[in-house]
Length: 182
Image (tube, rainbow, N blue to C red; front, top):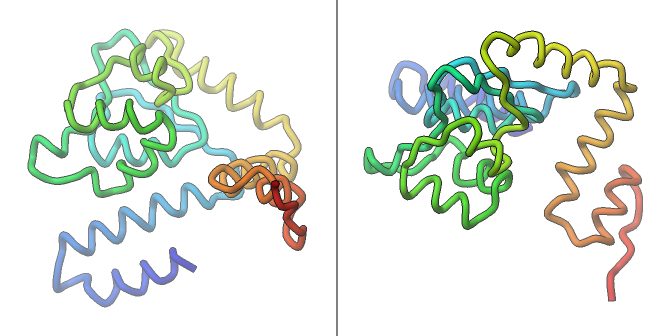
């Protein structure tokens, strides 16, 4: 699997190239979040930039405190690098190409309200209600069938970039034959 290959590379290069080692560790962590058999929830209680934003994009749901002056951003271009921890891909899939270009090239810090409007965040809550609101959401999701929730999540993630016919086959599970579209 991708995760095992990354872990093998990180062990080999650990002492030789610390920055590369950290990058592989980051990618393995992000991959593990995305491949989890459980529904994942990110509770962002602070400013979130760069790798933090890219990590948040790995989660199924993302919540942020709205009234503490926290922001979310992808400022890498200001440093002369690209959002290379998956930002150009994961964030773009969440918010669309035009907004992703705006977000990453202007390097603006978005308020939780702006990020939710762009669908980068699921929702935002006042600090006083944050933990309770996120926990209530998690509790609600946890009452769903774990198998059905995982399979719905899998079909959405894996079928999103396929044609409708292939996506419908993906929804039916492994071994299904895709219906070709006219």
